[in-house]
Image 1 (cartoon, rainbow, N blue to C red):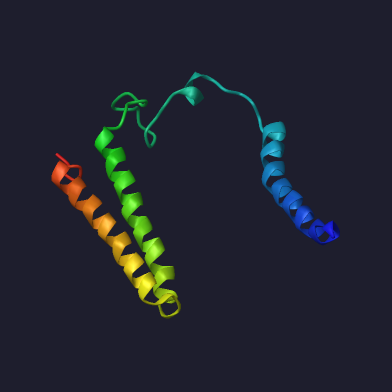
Image 2: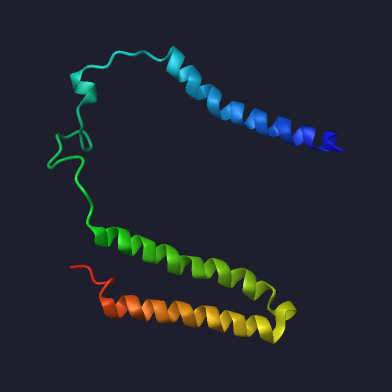
Length: 118
Protein backbone atom coordinates (compact mmCIF):
# COMPACT_ATOMS: atom_id res chain seq x y z
CA UNK A 1 0.00 0.00 0.00
CA UNK A 2 2.85 2.43 0.73
CA UNK A 3 4.52 1.85 -2.63
CA UNK A 4 2.06 4.31 -4.18
CA UNK A 5 3.68 7.06 -2.13
CA UNK A 6 7.22 6.35 -3.36
CA UNK A 7 6.97 8.73 -6.36
CA UNK A 8 5.77 11.50 -4.03
CA UNK A 9 8.66 10.87 -1.65
CA UNK A 10 11.13 10.93 -4.53
CA UNK A 11 9.59 14.15 -5.85
CA UNK A 12 9.98 15.79 -2.43
CA UNK A 13 13.58 14.62 -2.06
CA UNK A 14 14.51 15.84 -5.55
CA UNK A 15 12.75 19.16 -4.93
CA UNK A 16 14.64 19.71 -1.69
CA UNK A 17 17.86 18.73 -3.47
CA UNK A 18 17.26 21.32 -6.21
CA UNK A 19 16.79 23.96 -3.53
CA UNK A 20 19.69 23.02 -1.25
CA UNK A 21 22.40 21.97 -3.71
CA UNK A 22 22.92 25.46 -5.28
CA UNK A 23 23.28 26.94 -1.80
CA UNK A 24 25.87 24.36 -0.82
CA UNK A 25 27.69 24.71 -4.15
CA UNK A 26 27.84 28.50 -3.80
CA UNK A 27 29.18 28.19 -0.27
CA UNK A 28 31.87 25.72 -1.31
CA UNK A 29 32.89 27.25 -4.67
CA UNK A 30 32.42 30.95 -3.86
CA UNK A 31 35.37 33.08 -2.78
CA UNK A 32 35.65 34.01 0.90
CA UNK A 33 37.53 37.32 1.06
CA UNK A 34 35.61 39.61 3.44
CA UNK A 35 37.12 42.97 4.32
CA UNK A 36 35.97 46.02 6.27
CA UNK A 37 34.42 47.71 3.22
CA UNK A 38 32.38 44.63 2.26
CA UNK A 39 31.10 44.31 5.82
CA UNK A 40 30.10 47.98 6.10
CA UNK A 41 26.45 48.88 5.83
CA UNK A 42 25.17 51.00 2.96
CA UNK A 43 21.93 52.33 1.51
CA UNK A 44 21.79 52.15 -2.29
CA UNK A 45 25.52 52.71 -2.58
CA UNK A 46 25.61 55.65 -0.16
CA UNK A 47 26.72 55.83 3.45
CA UNK A 48 23.73 55.34 5.77
CA UNK A 49 22.03 58.51 7.00
CA UNK A 50 20.93 56.98 10.31
CA UNK A 51 21.52 53.86 12.33
CA UNK A 52 20.87 50.89 10.05
CA UNK A 53 19.37 48.89 12.92
CA UNK A 54 16.79 51.48 13.89
CA UNK A 55 13.42 50.36 15.15
CA UNK A 56 10.17 50.90 13.30
CA UNK A 57 7.30 52.68 14.94
CA UNK A 58 4.82 50.24 16.46
CA UNK A 59 2.02 51.83 14.41
CA UNK A 60 3.64 50.41 11.28
CA UNK A 61 3.21 46.89 12.65
CA UNK A 62 -0.33 47.64 13.81
CA UNK A 63 -1.38 48.81 10.36
CA UNK A 64 0.28 45.74 8.81
CA UNK A 65 -1.58 43.38 11.15
CA UNK A 66 -4.88 45.16 10.52
CA UNK A 67 -4.31 44.91 6.77
CA UNK A 68 -3.69 41.17 7.04
CA UNK A 69 -6.80 40.65 9.16
CA UNK A 70 -9.10 42.57 6.84
CA UNK A 71 -7.41 41.17 3.74
CA UNK A 72 -8.18 37.65 4.92
CA UNK A 73 -11.83 38.62 4.84
CA UNK A 74 -11.64 38.56 1.04
CA UNK A 75 -10.00 35.13 1.16
CA UNK A 76 -13.07 33.82 2.99
CA UNK A 77 -15.60 35.70 0.86
CA UNK A 78 -14.52 34.25 -2.48
CA UNK A 79 -15.07 30.54 -1.73
CA UNK A 80 -18.28 31.42 0.09
CA UNK A 81 -19.58 33.24 -3.00
CA UNK A 82 -18.73 30.25 -5.20
CA UNK A 83 -20.78 27.75 -3.15
CA UNK A 84 -23.58 30.08 -2.06
CA UNK A 85 -26.22 28.00 -3.86
CA UNK A 86 -25.13 24.83 -2.04
CA UNK A 87 -24.99 26.23 1.50
CA UNK A 88 -28.33 28.02 1.40
CA UNK A 89 -29.73 30.38 4.01
CA UNK A 90 -27.56 29.00 6.83
CA UNK A 91 -24.40 29.87 4.90
CA UNK A 92 -25.75 33.31 4.10
CA UNK A 93 -26.49 34.01 7.77
CA UNK A 94 -23.11 32.64 8.84
CA UNK A 95 -21.34 34.98 6.43
CA UNK A 96 -23.38 37.95 7.61
CA UNK A 97 -22.35 37.10 11.18
CA UNK A 98 -18.71 36.86 10.08
CA UNK A 99 -18.91 40.21 8.31
CA UNK A 100 -20.66 41.79 11.28
CA UNK A 101 -17.85 40.71 13.61
CA UNK A 102 -15.29 42.17 11.20
CA UNK A 103 -17.20 45.44 10.92
CA UNK A 104 -17.41 45.72 14.72
CA UNK A 105 -13.65 45.14 14.93
CA UNK A 106 -13.01 47.71 12.21
CA UNK A 107 -15.16 50.33 13.96
CA UNK A 108 -13.41 49.59 17.26
CA UNK A 109 -9.97 50.09 15.69
CA UNK A 110 -11.16 53.24 13.95
CA UNK A 111 -12.52 54.74 17.20
CA UNK A 112 -9.31 53.82 19.07
CA UNK A 113 -7.31 55.76 16.45
CA UNK A 114 -5.30 52.75 15.26
CA UNK A 115 -5.75 53.82 11.64
CA UNK A 116 -4.50 57.38 12.20
CA UNK A 117 -0.95 58.02 11.07
CA UNK A 118 0.54 61.22 12.49
